[in-house]
Image 1: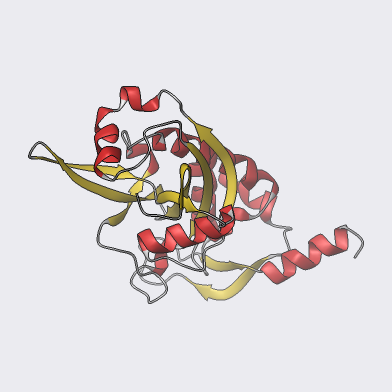
Image 2: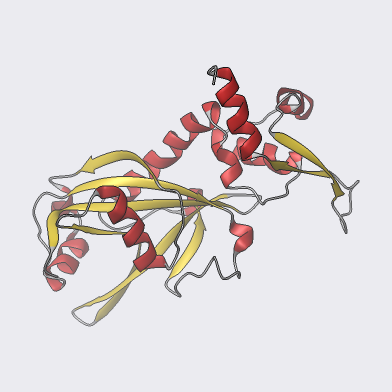
Length: 242
């Protein structure tokens, strides 16, 4: 094992994206060979933390090393431990042995981040060839306890979206109300009446209408909006009496 790492504590990162239809997650291909057979499993970005490295710094470093992504806001949402996990996942046990990693009880600290997928192709969105987005509801198997982590992250996101404007981190800089409604429906796993949904957001001063509409669409072009973080912060400060 690489020196300087803590053998029993890891950080895994769940990076969500929204392709205007599905909630996606960023996954990595873990390719290795057992007795001549090549396995290509999927995993979350994650690794062991370093000695004298705090968890937040570890999450930022690991995500950048494994995906090439940087400058993302990461939030810790849970911890996972599975003392008997490797008794059921023989392939993971073999992988750990090949990497000279501990096969003992592993504790994982999980983080999540939200990303605007429309930036793909830009310099700020450079990810490795082994990394790709997959719709969350199409992921059925991953290494270690990563499926448990992936199941926990959307549940946390559903709580967050009801009290904080975190959903705007998944939308393009300019978006329509229909796109925003679709995102809320995908995350909350429910359908909203169009009129009621728009009425709920109509008085939110941090949702700013633009003098710009869609072009090249078959339907009546919709107006674009943007989320003003500055206005949102001002409203929150005013509500707290600052």
